[in-house]
Image (cartoon, rainbow, N blue to C red):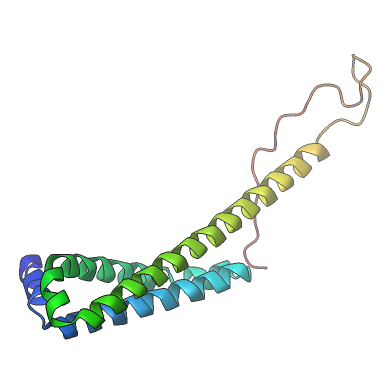
Length: 155
């Protein structure tokens, strides 16, 4: 089946069936985002990473369905107005959950960067001379920054 045939098949679904399909995908995506957010808050980055493939698939499905809803909106409003309203509120829930998810991801990224910077600074400080330099200052010239950090992921 070609992409055009798949789009035509989705667009030709009965209004209530299309809305139900979109709502199911939307609810599942919101649930996955919530689960990922919870895991990230708990610092379980590896567990959160296992959700990426499913989250990506659901997001792609939802975007395809959302485009179909946009194309079919006049028909859907006539045939299933309550379902269209449910989709609107579901989309708002998704937007709220995505914003929260992005805030948590940004926080996790900032914490990780801070930790790596602190480790690199500490490693660089260890290699700094502890004697007086030619200028009479402790440490003399600044040492070169730490060249790399090794992480043992087995722990």
